[in-house]
Length: 249
Image (cartoon, rainbow, N blue to C red; front, side, top):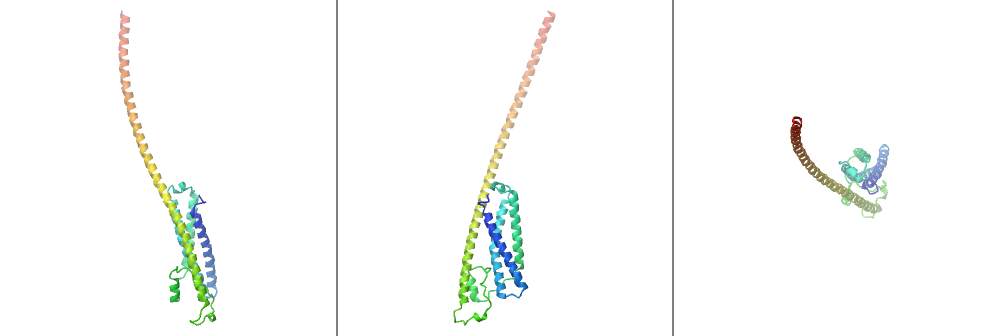
């Protein structure tokens, strides 16, 4: 079952995201203890939010899959042991607790600094990080001159959007697999219920026939017992008469 179970694929993605979150949270803590560059700190925060945005839908899908397995008889029919179902539930709960703890530590996101940035990022998720650039005011030129940082920023945003598209495609595929599996489980449960109903009808019919046969047998025994008693009584009278004739003849 493990070879074609989409749970393990999604779980691997979640575990990778949790490792990335742990590393980013540690980096943010180091920045807070030191005198950080504000732009670098904002970049790290945005990376954390982007990772959370990717992990949370996967966790919701895993939770829904575990809920389906916890339905009576579903795990056994799919070949998933009870201890495996408990292990999956424990993993989902631990992962959700870790994600919730990290999200509680995050400050509220700051608004985007300029209208041009808001326009450029409106097509993508606000959780994805802006490009990090070292604070170097000497590199800024006049408004009319070409800024290499602007070109780099546009290229970086394009790469981020492509990564987001690939992530959404992977998530859609995983959701489709989980939905198909849930549909299959529901159909199997419905078929099992139909089979149980048919078996109940057969059992009731068989019980009725057995009761009817028992009543016929009881009546037959009673009738034959009565006839036998009369035969014995008549035979005793005949024997008594014959014995009397023999004795008094």
